[in-house]
Length: 63
Image (cartoon, rainbow, N blue to C red; front, side, top):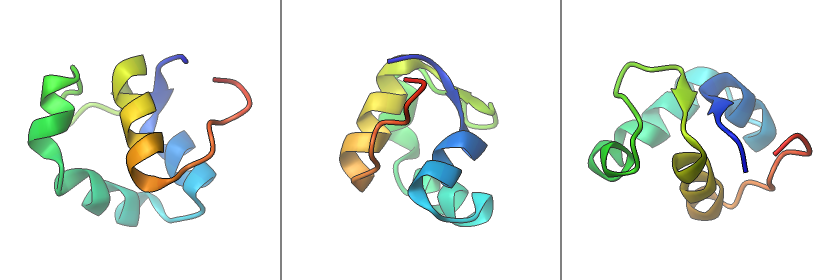
């Protein structure tokens, strides 16, 4: 697993970046625990794994 941009994960989930940001906003505290910055565009590997597991996103090929 590697760090990924939020727009990359939104694309993998098949949703717009706005929708993806709303999804993440609902879990702001959990993401902060995993090292994600609220306004940051890059999610650390632990946060990427959690987001993929939480929202049923297939791990992108590059991960």
